[in-house]
Image (cartoon, rainbow, N blue to C red; front, side):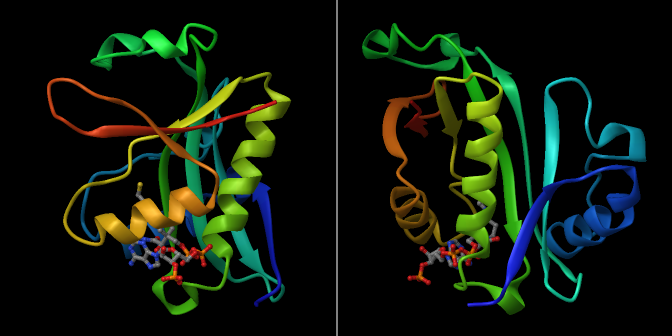
Length: 162
Ligand SMILES: CC(C)(COP(=O)(O)OP(=O)(O)OC[C@H]1O[C@@H](n2cnc3c(N)ncnc32)[C@H](O)[C@@H]1OP(=O)(O)O)[C@@H](O)C(=O)NCCC(=O)NCCS
């Protein structure tokens, strides 16, 4: 396994974050657009670097997820009416399957615990391919299927904390 460390991204990391996003979604309009957008209030990016400093992955999320109305059935979630939302996760294909993604998720979970969240949620991308691999990745990171979103029948997955 590569030595990797994960840290909250600050303004000095802006160009590395943009370079990874460009690698993931070439030519698309994505945030952050300015260094100041990297960490606003309770939202953040985490950046993974190898020991030589090379940026190899990122996670974006926030700690103010309350959109239970998007769920078709949340009856069993009454104790957790809020949580941290893992919005996006990307690892440079040249270092995949070497635990960088797991390290990023673990670091985001640690941030969520620090923010007092009872739960981390994610909606694994269904498109364009590799849905089953994505699910097995989140399963291994201790996420479980929580509920179906509406209007699309997309599963939201969560990792209860504490
Ligand atoms: C999902 C992803 C972050 C995993 O990163 P990683 O550093 O390879 O993760 P780990 O090494 O900790 O775990 C590896 C597992 O991730 C999953 N995985 C690997 N490549 C993948 C890919 N291209 N797409 C989806 N899942 C993948 C597999 O379950 C893999 O297990 P395996 O090696 O036994 O097959 C990375 O593959 C990625 O950036 N994919 C594209 C973007 C994406 O799908 N993001 C999630 C959106 S919700």
